[in-house]
Length: 295
Image (tube, rainbow, N blue to C red; front, top):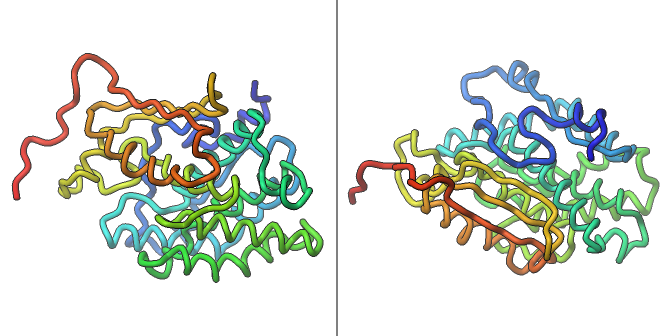
């Protein structure tokens, strides 16, 4: 059970231990940069991990990083996408930490332990670092934004982790975080548990159509309709596998999000076979998402 301090540390939204409903990210177009980054309130439960606490605190206070998150959201809105702001970042950080901790509890060993003889808490730093910076390249361009994220993130992580780690451990942590960043792309081929966690966590920010263009924007297609069909995502310990993900849908169209998008992110990662995913339509009737569709 979470301590009182961990309960207070949970972001609102979302709950750190529940990837359920959360509003779309704040609109950034038309906002002056100083006002936009002043709204950032990034929180996640560190569970006494001092290095993770330092990383999260420094990231939250870093004006350049907050500026990148602001620009990522501006570009997202230019393209009609729903959210790549700091809200998305916060959700992904919390989901990623939740996944990692459940996997470790279930006996899965992170690369930081298996390959570098470091600690599980260092794996948490790698996962948080990758999640914090996985989309900063969106501040430059959507196309190939994962690669753009790499050259922005390398310097920034050296700043954020200065005096947190000594060399060569700092270079190892940064390298593994960069691997997690590039691994979240569609064909990223993550080699490590930590990179797979960031990849899947990014895909699990799907509740209430957050991950795609909402139907209300007037853009009607399978991405928009299927995203609108997702009501909530819950991440719990599994009975047969370390993690159970329950996806509540209001319409069967949400299966596209699960089968095409989430499953694609999960396949060929070290998490494959470690997570049970169950998607179900709640209630006896399905919500009507659109009246008609024409070509």
